[in-house]
Image 1 (cartoon, rainbow, N blue to C red):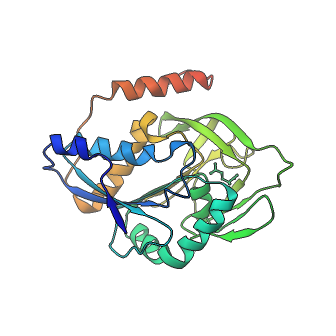
Image 2: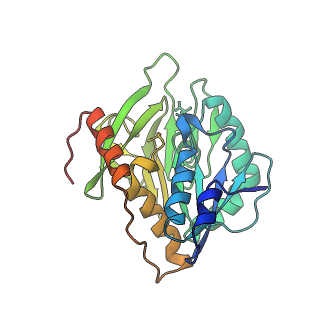
Image 3: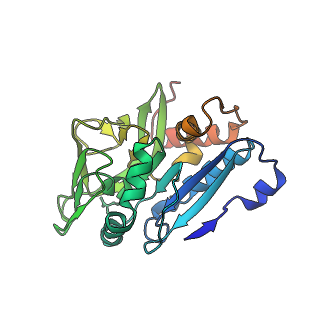
Length: 263
Ligand code: GLN
């Protein structure tokens, strides 16, 4: 187990006089398509700017993980990498993750990582990978000869938009125990049919949005931090940040997706 502090330079300049959070960043060596790593950097920056310490533990496939965590992040990956990730998650890390998420730890799982947090993923070759069942859902890849879901995606979420980029072959169908995270405005989302994007189960959030997702969706970044802080420091509320640049990026991405803003 290695402990990395992605925002060291910044943290050193700031007084971390707020609460302290722990985050396990799962399998960055296997699951880091489209710079999903930026989601962790974004969370760490938004904490540091507020005097919150976010201790990031990078968890590789063979690492042990016993200490309770306040947050989990996992990115996307290709089918081959997902097979290894599925194996590692189930045999090494399922207990820790399941225990903490049931206890209110926040989770962000993106694309391939999202699929593996469901019950199962059947990949393009027909190999079925078992997931952790954090989300009541199943994902099926219809085969390499069927068009992938690729492109800029915009969704409605909590009266605002989420914006990102999707590229997945798998089609995800939610069961009764999970709700969609957002409503697709432009793009495919979970399966290109029912208008749902991503999943929510308690404090766990799954999504097909790559990107990096959080730097240009700062409201979702703060939502995850708020959920994680709820049990660590229930009285604490996140101070607003001067994130005009992030919102400009958000609006630019919305424009690229061809969606006009309605906030
Ligand atoms: N391999 C998965 C699929 O094609 C996930 C891809 C991804 O994470 N972008 O559906």
